[in-house]
Length: 384
Image: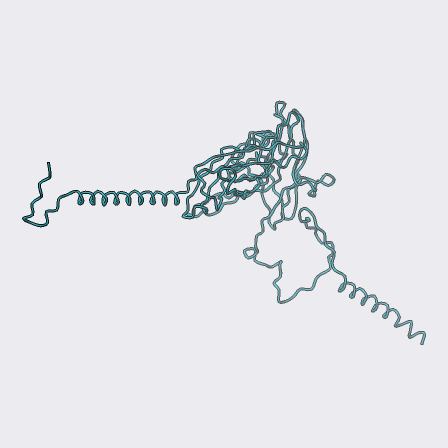
């Protein structure tokens, strides 16, 4: 019996071990990791052949023409410890002095399944007509912060699923003005495409990381409201008119700023005050401006409408309290429907009075005239 037990004991141990491992694989969830960017694929080290499902096509024998081409990439600030991995910096941001030289790096990741050719370059930032962050077109030469950057390698070929770390140098000019200077470092890929009219156009796709440089010196944050204009719109209901308010927000300082805006439209002595719902101002770069138009409903026609716009700067907590700005406008808001009704009433009264006067004059003439309705009747002589 002992001999039999010794023979089956290894099989029992093997069966128990296999069962426990299978149970653990079924019950325990797979671990996962998250990062700023997807991890770079690592080739498998297990050479064990995997079973192939006869119903599925063999990837090695797939027709290349039927394989979906995936082109996806990202450029991010390089990690401080491992330049081959993206760090936790959302952008390239520096505090510098005129004449400084900054050495850094960016990492370009090719997440697609095909080799890609990239152009890596720096450019200037700006605000578009909606106030959003924007960049110069790819064929425009930068003249501000983008011109301070030298990229280690402008044209780069990155294989599928790989990454390349590129050194960058930022030379702050000796005469750089104090304040914020903004740009970006981009990785672009150009490919031919067919336009709406059938012509071949060059499609430039690009992505990258923002570049913020604050040059030391006298900082002067200033966000101002200008050119407030109010247009009143009449309605049949004297209390139900509306107004269109247009104003301009200007960053007159040397620091990038956003702003919280409030506004009101009211009649004399604050009668019929209406609050204007206004959007917050996005971050405006120094020298940029944004024009905003808002519609205000239920504005009473009280002959005159007074508009007030106020802005409180945001986004520069490190500079302490920044004084806000105000803008005002006055416009004519007559109760046109009521005035027309009053005018009609006045004309009606004048017409009625004219008719009454005409009737009174006619009656007076009839009373004063002799009665000649009976023939042969002579008027009696008047006593001397």
